[in-house]
Length: 160
Length: 286
Image 1 (tube, one colour):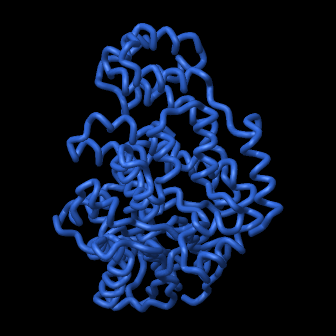
Image 2 (cartoon, one colour; image 1 turned 135 degrees about the vertical axis):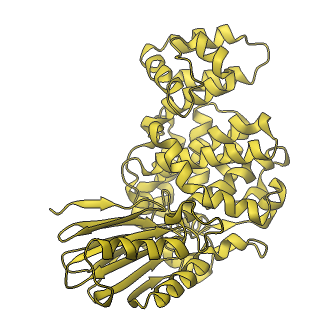
Image 3 (cartoon, helix red, strand yellow; image 1 turned 30 degrees about the vertical axis):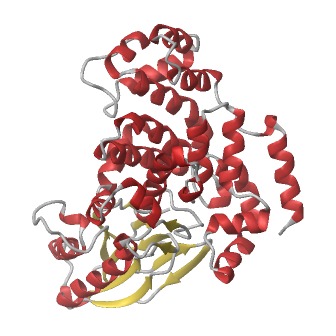
């Protein structure tokens, strides 16, 4: 049994094969980035799209957490050109009042996550996004696969 | 509707023995605190009768979450230092934990997940009350937050059997999960929760929170603010992924509840942004 590393809300963790990174997502987005050559990878669990007060809790926001994660991975020996990303989460409340901006937070998180990855030229190879389900994701660093458990069903994505 | 499941739930809720137990001291203390004729000495005497609980209560009084600095070594001291309402909250925490920390398999919640969700909703509800200058209800929404989900503990067994049908009903009829529970099983977890609170002899405002936290507009007007606060805190904690089960986010955030509490869009987003801090705060209560 490989070591399971839990990634909490607004946290970033990275490790190497055969560790497994796990997180639980509602409207948050989980970003799994993998170097298929070095077999190292990391996960960010972002809560909100924009960090308005720079320098504060960088791991919480898509626009600061994703560069931070990539930076950690390259420091650990990953090469930018070997990196690919899988993203999951960003669910919305089933129904919300017309005045509830918070209802759209999942979508805003998804949008900003994609934008940041594009800026860093990291391709998104798998998306499991939106809807109204919570998700438990396991990111296996032995081969970069991602397992998503949602609504009592499991899916495994192998593409890296 | 699945008549077989409905009949089985009928039997469970008609038979008090089959509903979860709570140490008697908890309901006594909760009712004593709302009675102005009771002195704090009487409350302390009631608590110390239960030695095992007293030890755990004192441990929590000295936790980072509740401590005010000086070590508390007696219930008398705890009431003087923390206040009667705070000690009442702690009594409930100690009493309710064994009921709420178990895995709730039908909702796909592991050991401690429902408890953690209750603690988070309680903490966020209390923050909302304090920020909105409603200090007088801070302890009530805290307690309500802890137990709002208690019906799930009993109904989970049936949800497990009916899950596929419930989810289908959610999607085909476009209704939230708790309404689909009722469609399929004849009951939802809020109604079962209310029965549990009746058994425990809890005051009406807490029954309203448990019964109406998904539909605050239907709560009795005198409890609507308390119910609305827990409604919002529950939704935000689930969005943050805390205690999210197989019912996911198949729930609602109601405009009426937001209006009732007077929370602005910015304040709502700040509450959501505070989810990681709340998880840190409750760590020593888990």
